[in-house]
Amino acid sequence: MDRVRAIIGNRRRNDNAHSSATDPYDVGTQGGRVESSQDMPFHAPDDDQITMFESENGMNDAEDDDNVTFVSDTSTIGDLQRRGFVNRCPQFDSRRSIPLTSIVLARGFYAFPSEKSFKIYLHNKRKFDNINLKDGLGIPLFHLIPSNVMKSIFSNKSTPVMKIYKYIIMTKEDLAKEEEIFQNDISTSNLSLNEKLNEQDESKIRHPREEIFKAKDDSFTIFKIEFCTVYREIVHYNQCKHNFVFYEEFQNIPMINYSQRKHSDTVVSGMNLRWYGTTGFASPFGSTNFKLLVLDDGFPSYMTSSNIEEYDEQVRTSTTGRRPLGFMPVWAKYSDEKATVLPKKRTLRLANLDIREMSNDTDIENNPDLRNGILNVPWETQILTCMCMVLHEYESRKDKRHSGAVNNTFMGPLYM
Image (cartoon, rainbow, N blue to C red; front, top):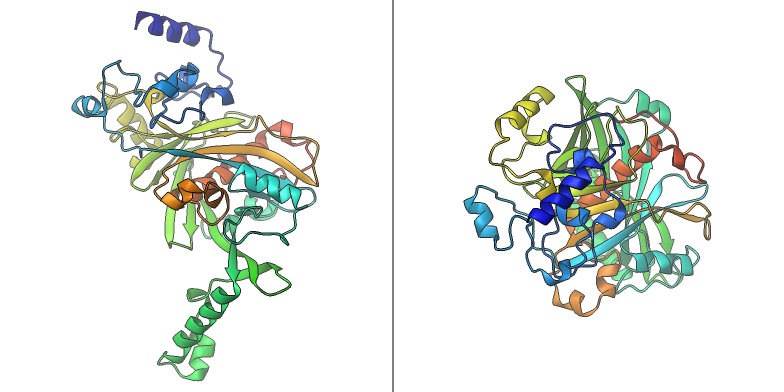
């Protein structure tokens, strides 16, 4: 343990923070430093919880550890609970790499469900003629389109700043069944014909969609539906709250950050999460990599305080008896180290989101292609991917290195 402390202490002394904005919460996280993309070893299949400290030290031998918490060699999750550290991070058993890409002269950017799906998309020359309906490989998962600059400047909490569209596949049989259900809902209504035409909201039954591709034999159709709308609200002059409205599950999930602070907090599936490494207004440069941490229960969070003063008070009163951020499990990691400058088949890679998942379906485990396409993406992964896409949009606006690239990411107002 003395050797470990010496290594960690030496890293802290040699650390050069890239941002002038400091956060009193970053105890044990290398002074708020955003680690390099090599810090998070997604190649370790046997770890169910990878922590910040493990990623900072490389953890090349982590593949031999079943449950590394970095508290002690004999500590268990039960030991942590007895010490008052309760972390409800899921027990992950699989990983997914999600490429974020753009098409030259096209608006917005895309997220693909896997590297294999993106490669097939390029191999098919961005066409959908040879799609396998069983796995949905070669089709984007999401398409983010930001509002124009003027709307972003004068937007209020009722004006969306971004919209995220989802690609879906519907077979001929699916369309026929949907039409039958739609007609039955209309015919069984107690409204008169005129009332049905004037008052019946078709979007409540059949989601508005755009046809992207239709097979020549009408066997299937690819649609793009509005999946998530993002609204922005400024609260207490320095709190920026983004509301993610997901139509598929009728969920409204907030994400909060402060103008003079780093990081962004949210709550998904009852767990407090932190996008660690996102920049604040104090930093003129965007972050090129950040992580999603699962916070301990009771750990200070933007989500549990109404303003920054209340948040600071939580930090001061809870310093004793809580773990630093460096010990929190890592759910996902964003990095643009694989970004390309020269387009390939009019397509640029902007960044990658590596995210951990739970695979409970035996069929998917036996056939990896089933999880590599758009048909079997976990709901939590979809939520977090949408958040990451929004964060990428904001960070890349500030990152001057993106301004020279041939992509459609335009300069706009900072979100902080």
